[in-house]
Image 1 (cartoon, rainbow, N blue to C red):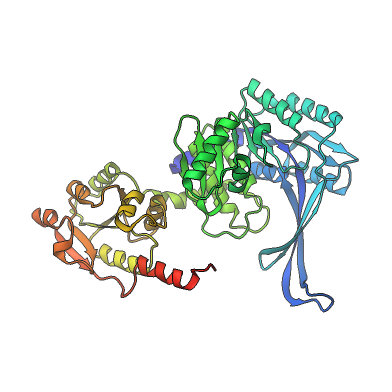
Image 2: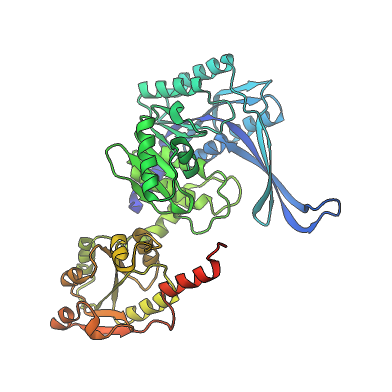
Length: 490
């Protein structure tokens, strides 16, 4: 997605009004260090350093929206005790509309306490009820939601299975949103997704999608089957399945699956990542983005949040900063037409174009040093990589280990690489005929007579250069070393 589109969407967030409905709770954190075992029992002793309490569940969706500048309202039910008062206090500080927040003396406010040592959760304590709302509270909650729904640009449902979102509440809310033509997004819970029938979009994780469809999600075809099953089963416009390290997969009516690789560089804590996805996806569509664009924006935001510890939100500044970094990488990829246009704009002076190709599956130091040396030969280095189908034909059904879009992104992040191109054929000969590079580079394990395209390049005055890889460095060797050390698991 273009950087300008990201900036415009984020700017538009300030004009939006969004209603969040669901189970709100308090997330409490005890941070400390563990360096000894208790003499009283074989348990760790936490040396407490600090405590923190923040909004969780649907409250974290609210926090994310407020952080993005969205005018937000909350519809939920909390208790009348200190935790319920704390929720209202935090909401007031955020400027959240609370006309649809009900208090019930018989219903405790959910509270989750997490014990964290060395940036890792070691224990969680839950204090809550999962009892469904009674008829009186259901009717009052629905009445208040309907009173403000027409003022909203979107409705987000955050279901944590704590009893606020009964089947009756969900049916009424979804029905009224459809009548008012307001997009409604659901972060689902449980095994039965029929209760979300008629929503605009749901955002299950992989485990939830598997439970709801009964399909074992072992590979990408399984994900695709589950996505389309949910679309049809719940009469949805879209389904976004979050897949942890494998990114996200978006499914829409009459459209092929749209797979988005993860943007996270480091993962410290996935707590609340689903809340961020729901918030940014809903706000993105409400801001006028198409579903694929909104999903990419949500993926970007999730990548920021999982690099933090604890229930976190994301700011517009963070999103713009990370999008700007990604823009510099994405500009290095594109179709052959894009590359030819880029070459034509290199400048009036003659620049030397270098070309190399390969699978580049499981990038290693040998690849990097090879590409750095190749770049030193000229001014603009093009790396053409085999598509996934092409790699399978060349190296067998177990390869590639890394998808073509991810391999392209990894290579694009290298400073020495100027453009990455994916080709579907077994050889890059047809590409070479269009690009006509000055220098064709291959590894030192080739002879010049073995280099495909040599005659073509030398025929118009170019040259072929062979660069040796570091001894014993190859993807195949690396795979064999991994299997030898970890064949039985890590």
